[in-house]
Amino acid sequence: MNPKLLSAFLVAVAIGLAGCESGKQAEKEMAPATESNADKPAVAEAVVMTAEATVTAINHDTRDVTLQDSDGNTTEIVVGEEVKNLPQVEVGDVVTVEYMEAVTIEVMGPDGAEPAAAGAAAMGTAEPGKKPAGAEVQELVVVAVIEAIDEENEQVTLKGPEGNSRTVKVRNPANLEKVAVGDKVMFTFTRALAISVTEKPAG
Image 1 (tube, helix red, strand yellow):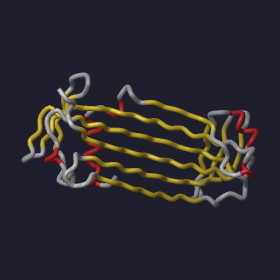
Image 2 (image 1 turned 60 degrees about the vertical axis):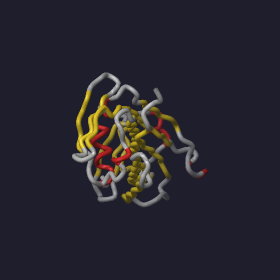
Image 3 (image 1 turned 180 degrees about the horizontal axis):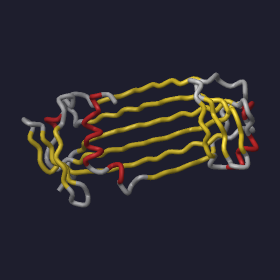
Image 4 (image 1 turned 180 degrees about the vertical axis):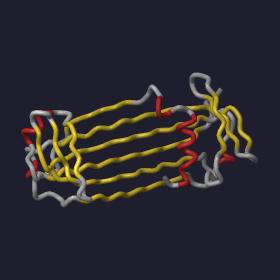
């Protein structure tokens, strides 16, 4: 994780993002990326969580910030020097943290991409003088090949880019009829975190 967003993660933990009730999970079937894969299964799943907290106290010299969530729970954190816009934060401001995890699984034919793994990341921060804000997106793409299919136990064995094999249970057994040994499977994992500070509500 980029150190410029370390404080964002600390805020996320401090206000209980991982267990917040606003988390939503959705799964849907996707259209195949190419017509040649029209009969192959593809699915996408995402979890999105949002949490808010109010700044109840702040010491700009020591960079200590006290946050209070909607249940009245308070947490104190020390904001790192990498957050340049802390002077713009005031008591009453609202900190919003949004977190998303998503995975897409697409089965390709035997002529699909060769087994491989690749990652990428991008980030952005607020302009100087603005309220603090930051966002980071990380993506990992892994291509594996189906080594074996066990319809009786509703499992497939996948061989990864490093030659390691793993047997997994499929979530939708009906999809086993649409795949074959030798098919390539592309997994795309995406993780995103965004944090923003907005002015305290009027009144």
